[in-house]
Amino acid sequence: MRYRETDDVFKTLVSELHSTLTPTTIMGITILAVGLFAYQSLGSMPVLIATIAGALASLAKIAVSLAHRRADAKARTTVADAARWEKVQGVFIFLIAGCVGTLATVAFSHRDLSVHILAAALTFGYCAGVTVRISVRPYIAAVAILIAAVPATIAVVLYGDMAHWILGLLCVIFIVAAMQSMLHVYRTTVRQIRLFLEMEHQARHDPLTGLGNRTALSEAYLSLGSAEDALTCVHCFDLDGFKHVNDRFGHAVGDALLVAIAGRLREELNKPAIAIRIGGDEFVILQPNLRDPAQAEVLARRVLDVLGAPYRIAGEEICIGISLGYTMALCGSADLDHMMVTADKASYRAKRSGGGMDREIPATLDLGKFAVAA
Image (cartoon, rainbow, N blue to C red; front, side, top):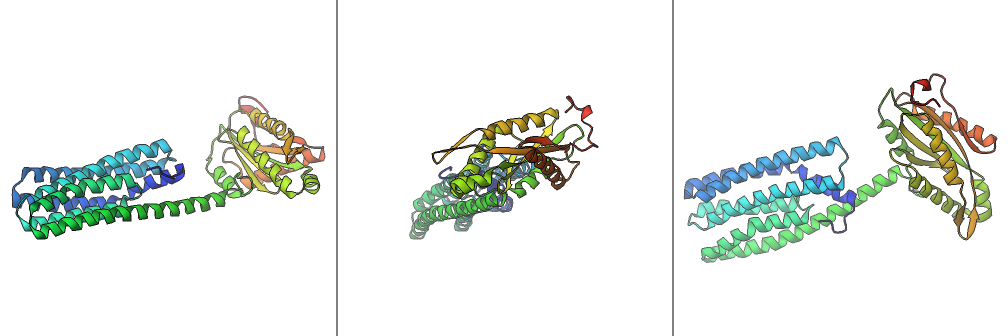
């Protein structure tokens, strides 16, 4: 169900499906115990088939959940990945529901009241578990409840005596209540996930521009790992004359200018490069996995050209200068804070020279072994 779900919410909800290992195990054991007792009492081959199929489907569901969990742990899940896992999980949920429904329906068609008691407990227990644990995917949960409960309810009513009519009425009431509870759990979970994702986003992003902040920069840098055949470049830059813009046009226009600069950076940068606002008019670009040192200068010049073009804000044409400095190091070989200090020094030199670009490359870094010398 994708109603009002963003991609991140959808992926988070689907990931909850692999957290049902314990309930699935318990249900598989319960199906096996109730089914074998019913088969021993009734001698019904459909009961035996439903019992074996339910136990096997439960084992398969456990295997799928473990595979799903491993896949989520190994790599960032895409929407397409989540959609596939949702379908696979749904198939086995429906199979288990079908086995529960078949077992209970056949049990209620016989005259053994002890089997009726166990069948009713199995059906109610399964539907209660689905209501609580599968409600994060409400379409799957609703279909599973209907598959398990509706045939059994019909069989109860057709049994014919007053007690079974009352039980059938209770089943109908339970189905309706389960649907309402399921929707309540789903909506509550969605609200909680949205709140969590929003808080997580705010913790890693600048509230004005939407660019990443220092936390996001640190996490991105730490995730790069080490490599002897690749370089990481850190670009630091600030705006020349930004105070004049604020003084002349007001802080609202200054903020709008920062937002416009962030927009141009997002359009210009290709992953895995990312732009960060670290405060005021100061920005950082992390450019990892370079095989050619010249790529750093290419990006620096492109940033100067793109950000130096005029901005049309509040009916005014605003031009702003850029002072940018950059440094490089082998991937994972340098401290991020040290690289930022080094790049800052280069940007200050550029500012003293009237703006533009400068760089500072550590003397210990041998660029000659790369494809093109800087």
